Image 1 (cartoon, rainbow, N blue to C red):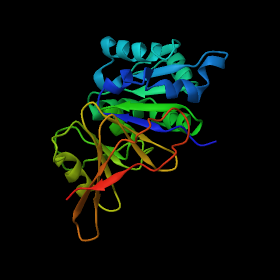
Image 2: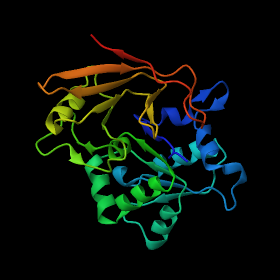
Image 3: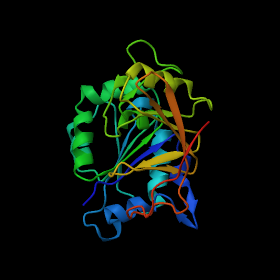
Length: 248
């Protein structure tokens, strides 16, 4: 059984996107078998990056309710033993946006990073929004442009550096790829967009085209535009490879 795809989002808009009358997130319900599950599917929200602001958790619960998942819990930056036990049994986990370093240091301080890797391997559906998407990738940085010592390593579940809602030229992502060096690649996700990263390595843009940035052995950057497929993922294996078009 292949692992579920990782969902990497620039912002929360795709959480409420509907395709032909059905929620895009309906694939989460399909993958978790939510309709037949006893006990119910558990969904966990990690808000460490934004200081555990309640309003952002409410966005998460609204998105989950839209696909019939109501067994939700906010896991704070300093989780209790009960919080960690919930997380260890979560079927759906969302890493929220905010300050990438603040969130990452909180995850490491309390062993949440280890739990996230374990849950991914166990088949949980992981989603990251903004800084949370960066955490699922190879590394993160805090300002518009990565500074010395950045990108700093993160979960590495997605084999890319992830950047979100940058200017169209993607200056931060390109500098991060340069500073990380070969064989690092980067994915740029624009505002309102996302990417599904499937277990076979295929990249499926969501709502908006995404950008793939790579570096060759001579230090030249290459940029490719990845287009959303004609049929949106519904919880089954993709029928066809994602279209790719090289930018000139």
